[in-house]
Image (cartoon, rainbow, N blue to C red; front, top):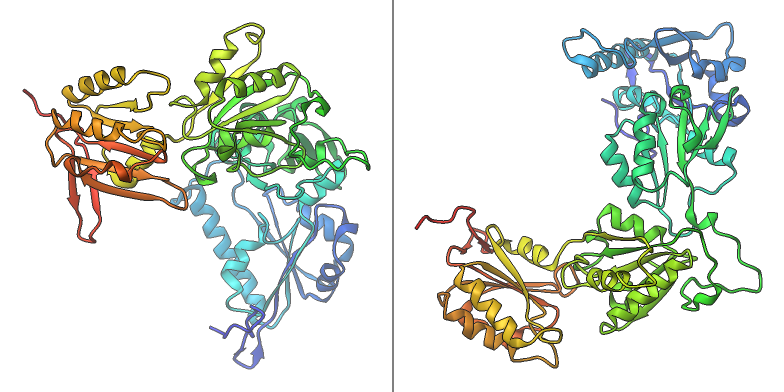
Length: 531
């Protein structure tokens, strides 16, 4: 095996008396021969051998693009796939048949390279972007001097033919193969800003279904045979599935670029709270989004998509700060004691045609904003405003996962805050859950103005639980100040508990064990003893 050169190409060495030939992977661009690069034309002109892939019908799109640059004395190697989408009797199945084909094709090209010939493997688009050439590259590039000539991709060609930006500013562009399962496509389309789905053809019905389920269908565009004869573009929703070839892509372009260009005299920072200047966008709705206990890693794809699609974000400022600023979005922050006012603002905006995301920590339905929004939405004049609630990772689940599996059996969730219910009710519920031997997840255990509830809770629970019952203290789980500790119930110190802490109190069956690496884990067995 030859030594790698600094530029990533091997020097090829000498085999016998003749130096090895050179391998080129040549990108031809999306179809129009005039979009081939000067370097691609140059390499084909200098090559001894031109190789290209085709289906069994023998027609090669790559060859047709490069046809005017082929010479009569070129040695042509047609690498004909044994299968495309049909079944095969190969003992290794479809994948086995293709692997055998790639090995045989590489061996054919190696014969030329060993004879000192220059081999150009031509490929539509870019050779290393879903290109057939890459299978030759993996098998030959470490053995022979190799150069890859990049080409214009179908993604770039599709955007150019549509005349629309793919991504702008901090937007994320996702490239997806249409061969993914529909559920996976749906999740990825919901989570990204912009997308291109390749390899349509027979996958089109699933791709269209994923676009619809993810809410991206109204934005989606269709491009068929970009820059080639028979090119077709239009809204994806209008395309007949039976008419879609493999060489077609679905494009969900930049959301920022789709917004109206602001007047030159309007600065427009995207963080204004003056809703009087906000233009209506059609049918409005409110989506209550759970961001999980911390930052973006805890967001579900559906929630990420809803936040990106919103015209307005409404929420407690601390939670709004977890959401990236997007051009054109309006942000309406407030403190944590005006839930009803936030709900009314969100619903009023939606009545005016705005798409509103109410941002909530954790899961919005667990001691959070979903209830506040629904309470207001049940009243006139908001009953006709569409409201959706998207789940998020709860603080209890996040802390439990960090500690092990303390919620592995039946458990109860109780808030220790007496701001919205009297302490007597809380104490009665604690006694009932403790006497039933349920694991407890205790939210809102303390704050600057509430310092005594944790101590009272410990005293009450010790009437029903052993002193060595494991207690998990999870603070700022997922955040920069994350701390997860395990203590005995008798040793629970109220001074170490604040509003950012959640408490998980074990049952009589919960176990705490120190593992070989020194870490301590907690779990509650799934099986409860009889009697």
